[in-house]
Image (cartoon, rainbow, N blue to C red):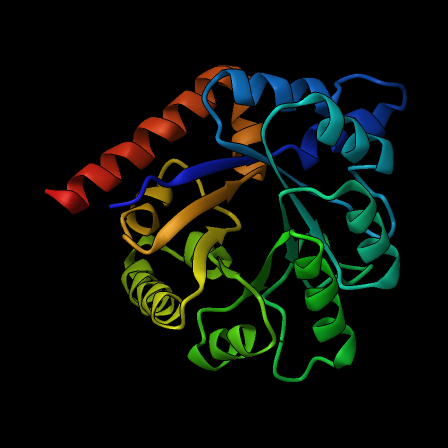
Length: 246
């Protein structure tokens, strides 16, 4: 079974900084600390309204932190231009609404216009691994492959937010999505809302190669410290993978 990378999303370190203004806490320092604690990558979502991560944060992480940077972004001309200038190892194209508190669901590739296809091709031609954030829907996954994406990130929010009794059906849906991605020749990632309690079942899918975790991880760091939380997630992921392999 391939190793599963933990990509730490540091958006909400920037949220805390922006609430007060100034430079503290610094998401670049958080990215360094996460990598030093064993994270395999760092994720940031540069939103149109710059509500948390800002351009300079992305520039500094790309230049100063030796890690796999995953830039989450809408498929807009502005964001594609930024990605083409910075050339991060990976970009994940996500839906974005100005009014939403957080990303509310997967991108509807089937109904998307030519702008999405153009963004995928331009990013891929620049040597950037292009992922699309989708629901675990075979039709959406097949569409991601058809337009040239190299990976999909399965939206785990509904599963993570569900009562424990309802989670098995969400796990089954996500497992089928991971299998569909693998069958289509796509890399498979997971992300959104994952916690200590919910990461294990999806980390056990052998097709999954990366988990992006942010809000819970940064919030729990208030109580335990960022390095300790990163190490615990790494241990939970390793335990899930070992259990699947046994």
